[in-house]
Image (cartoon, rainbow, N blue to C red; front, side):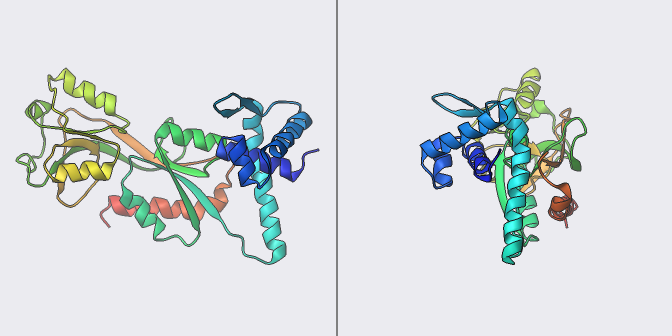
Length: 283
């Protein structure tokens, strides 16, 4: 028989990635939590975690249990609130691709009354969190037609508005041979961009490397260098110019986690989609 506290212990380990932190989150001792997990594993007849000295990882059985455990726990919590006469408080755990403009999320958050938890990460990290039930939905790159498409955008050069090439309609890579470039280390096309310039004999000086797009834009505005970014990044003092032959695009959309109730999330996800569409239209 599975008791509720078994599932609470299990979810705490999943969310914290550590037995001692999970015990603290559940206000029990670590031995107590370990015994509870052992009882749950015995009841199910399969190990839920692979334990090593450094970390705890879910087994296939643990992954199978996860979505059911979250649904059951959410049902318990909703029932308790309903009986107590309290309004059901909803929290959307939203994963956000780190290479998306901050304006999109600012616009979205300004429309929301419910609680929102933002979890940033790259595409691989967000997909892993979706699969493990650690987030409910993610704004990320879509591949193979999965998820709800929001927009498709290209990549282009970001230059300071005062840069001599800022007024051009198109720039060839060879014209940038002596231009310093800002490296966006978290860019999903970093390797492709490097190969593009190398194939054209362009090996620029890199005055800065950053994982912050806001900082990259600040460097561009200050004329420290130029960079390639998704077209959605538009800031005062920065102009966007296409790079001849660099035709890469990405499709941005929303992916809902397997455990999540898409109908419950729909109002918030529709607002997110609308916020991005309005920004893309310049509204």
